[in-house]
Image 1 (spheres, rainbow over the protein chains, first blue to last red):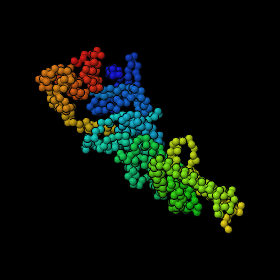
Image 2: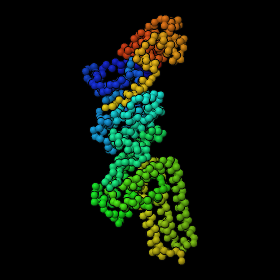
Image 3: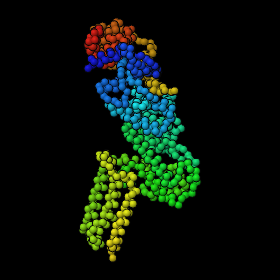
Length: 491
Length: 139
């Protein structure tokens, strides 16, 4: 096997001269990047390619060698450029890779501006690329130089380039006289305060996500960072005094966690961060939807000056209850013994004080608070959730048994009542409502995982029906009792 | 546009490496072959007698090289380099110190030796490979 390698190596060295340099893309003391074409014997050309030349002392290129060997061995790597050549000479390490067409993320944002759409289109795919780097190799390849200039956005997707350039960071080297102000994407450990690992890339991705949303607008960036440190979010202030945060709080939370200075506090992997991001996007969409709905139900229009100065309507309290429900709705159905607590009692009745055209700060803050609460509950281990389910199930069985006992072995007052009515009464008043409540308090996460095709009725959307159903059933029982003369069992 | 940061950091590191390497890199007072050999022995914790044996050198001759009494040929230097397990950079510096040509990748024989150095092949294996490709062996 090594014999073939040597031959290939000699072949690669021979081919060196066949590459025609079309343009020099970058020329610095530690790296030269060229756009090259390969000239065949008959004068035809292949390409373009990118050739990177590193001086041997810099120690770079080791990662390319690793990936090259994997690709030669047949490993399929969907998000990593194909490496055509990778060898070292007497003074350099040289790598030839595919030339990727497209704009860098930096160019794209400079031209088109940052936006949430950009983030939602680009970020998940970017995460996939980095995940492949981490997971396809053991020990994982840590990019260490993820920046908008190293991400190419093209019609075909996202490509991360400039692999393993920053591998050489050794913990001992600390210079204190160099200006590192533009180093926006590297976490502290990359400067030698700790070992770098996959969480280093998590940090960089957090910064990139922020970049997608805010560009290089440092003002906005620092606002998000303020949020990260626990201070209030500042954003747009409307004429009526209400405020709306500029970077959506759900996404800001993701960014804040990813860019925590302490690696221990960040997401443990890019996969986790991707999940959190998608989750945040869902929440964001739902919250916005809810607000639009809320505005629709209160009959308020955007930018409507009259609406803002309108006096409160007498029937305002009712819509506000729904508002809260709509806001609460989008929260993922996570087990919650506390579910009943988030009831209409907690509606910020203060909303009746004036009609608002934009989402009220209080409702928004409540939505955020509820979300964080849900997040906390989501961290309860699934195993515990299953234990909870078992307990709920056993209790349900107990109630079932008790119900049957009551029906068939009734004593005292109940005995006076005919069997069929007993059944109706017991089931209607106790059992069916109890079953419904049980369903709503179950922890269904693991079950959803195991049986993805099972379409369980959504609790999120229907939980306010619960009291309605229960009351209806009780009413029905009462009516039947009254109709049959059993309304007053005791005499 | 300030694209340079990666390089800045790298430059930092390159500058923060062992000052000896730094000096040598900038060719400040190139030292003699025997000096460099002694330094390498110390650095790598090797014994002269082991190196001479692994390099397939005559004991007396080897001793004289290390003492600076004899000037070895390029091949002999390569033998020593392989015996000591030097990196490519160190090998080239040793060759320079010995006033021989450094390894040049465009020369087929040198390229094979380059490859073998990177793979940490022992001397006899290097000879095998050279022979296989029809080049002159080292010894």
